[in-house]
Every structure is written in structure tokens, then in C-alpha cells.
Length: 145
Image 1: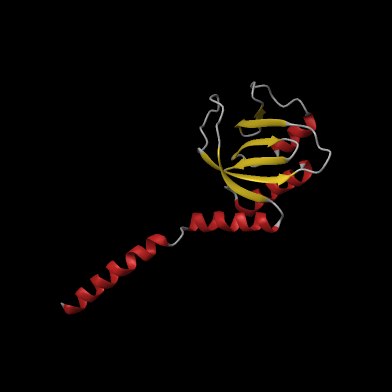
Image 2: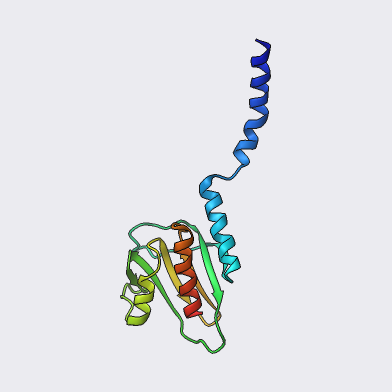
């Protein structure tokens, strides 16, 4: 009977430690974020205001992968992915630039939005798909930064 008490006490002491350990999903996200950093892409959790017309509401706080733009880039635009491969601007108009649309369609299905201004190019992404999806995101950022 005395051994059971020791096991119970050991369990009570160790159980909070187990809660602090990251899950497999959290470890996967951390790995993707470290890979992105090594590839020259920054990531931050960013609060977003999403258009009301999106079919599925993305999370309020979303991982935003971004990269500074080269000097002389003056184009500004923002597109949201309504459904996989369907990219719309703020007025719900499809992307008219065929080359840009083809590159947007190459992004993972869980990319919520892509925005460019004079200083930065940012992608709000759900981080599913691991290294292969990260490669698509990084390639897009490198091509348009």
C-alpha cells in the first residue's frame, strides 16, 4: 500500500511539468518558424481585421510572415483567399494581374491574405503543411519583396 502513495505523490508532482511541454503541433510550428528565420523571413503574431465576406473566419491573432521590400518597389495591393485559389481584393474583385494571380494560386490553401506596401510584403498563413508549404510562402515573398 505504501508504494501506491509514493506513485501518487510522484504523479501529482510531475503532472504540471507535462502540461508545460509543447505538443507535437506546437513543436511543428516552432520548427517552421525557425526555418523561416534561417531563410531570411520574419514572423510575428498579428491581430487582423478580416473582411466580413470571408467564408471561414480566420483566427483573430494570425501568424504573419513578412519581408522588407527592395528600394523602388511602389506597388501596393492586398488580396484575401476566399476559397483555395480564389483571390479577391477589398471590393471582392478577382486579381486582374494574371502573373500575380498565378503566383497567388501557388500558395498553400491556408494562406488567408497577402498584402504589399512600399516597405513590406506580408502573408497571413495558418502554418499547415510544414516545410513544403513554408517553401511556397518563402518563394512568394522572395519573388515580390
